[in-house]
Amino acid sequence: MLLGMSDMVELDPEDKKIITLARSARARNGVAEGAAVRDETGRTYVAGTVALESLRLSAVQTAVAMAVASGAKSLEAAAVVTEAEQPSEADLAAVRDLGGAGTPLLLAGPDGALRVSAEAR
Figure 1 (tube, rainbow, N blue to C red):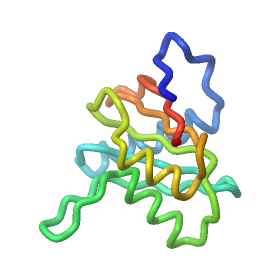
Figure 2 (cartoon, rainbow, N blue to C red; figure 1 turned 90 degrees about the vertical axis):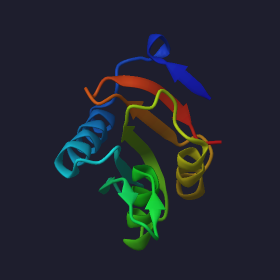
Figure 3 (cartoon, one colour; figure 1 turned 135 degrees about the vertical axis):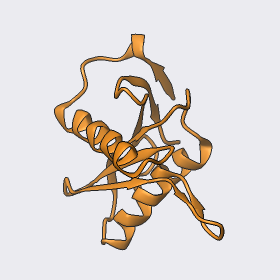
Figure 4 (cartoon, rainbow, N blue to C red; figure 1 turned 120 degrees about the vertical axis):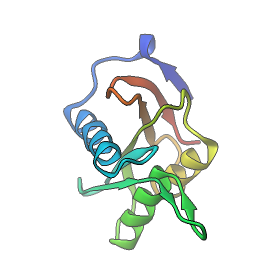
């Protein structure tokens, strides 16, 4: 399910935090996207787009992989900062794979403003 800004209520401080972390990763690394995910214990994992000749991962896929590699069992939420208007199906699938259906994926623009809140299905 996708919700536009007009459908949104005030963001939880923890959700604002992962958007800020995602925005920082994008700016710091000079990559197309920055992402952050929060696991079931509240730990966060921050990543940028991986664009190697032999390996291509979105920022969300990279952050989810980092969470899994660190022992996370589930996700509470994910955020991505990007120029895109909608989250990709691959990003929603990665969030769903670890977090389960209904896990929110917050998509924000480069300015940090929330554009879309989607739920992994």
